Length: 88
Image (cartoon, rainbow, N blue to C red; front, side, top):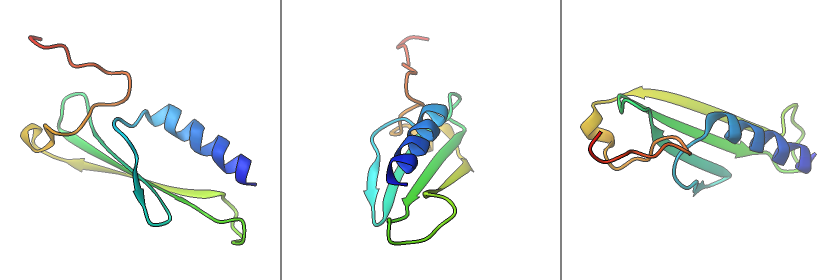
């Protein structure tokens, strides 16, 4: 089941393309990044369930969309693979 969880988590991350590095949290990971127009902040929380816990899903993921002003997210990365070109 642990390998199934890792595969499913990898697929989720490939689809959402969260920018930046994952922040380790108690019992899981947290990703925070911004939309292309910098008006939405995304917060992804992934909680892995241990092998000793019986659960229908191997992990739980919560994705929050938060409306923000662009200046509030200047320090956040964009989605993975997106490069901001200076002067454009």
